[in-house]
Image (cartoon, rainbow, N blue to C red; front, side, top):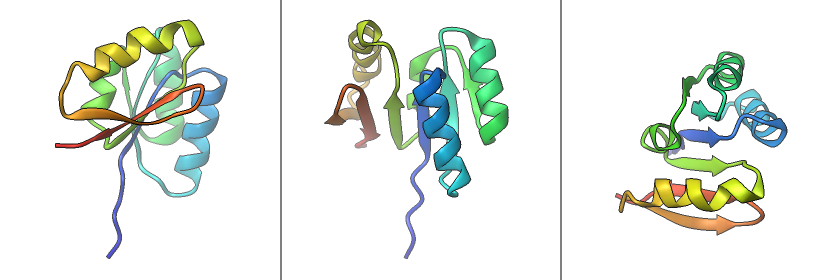
Length: 103
């Protein structure tokens, strides 16, 4: 049995764009992306076949796994916004946070 994990990317800069493109190229479904600048999210969304969103929470509700690929000073506020929904939890932290849907 194969499990498909829908991936969302919050942050369409160098790291987020590279991860989204690599994951999509390897067949992982990148379903939603967001950026402070909607045009960056739209450009990346077209490249990976995803939906573009302005608000981070809009990405998280569409994905099973959400990657935060943001500048360090933005990680805390964005993570707090996404974490307000009790169906998400932080499951891994490097310099960036990763969320998965738990309910």
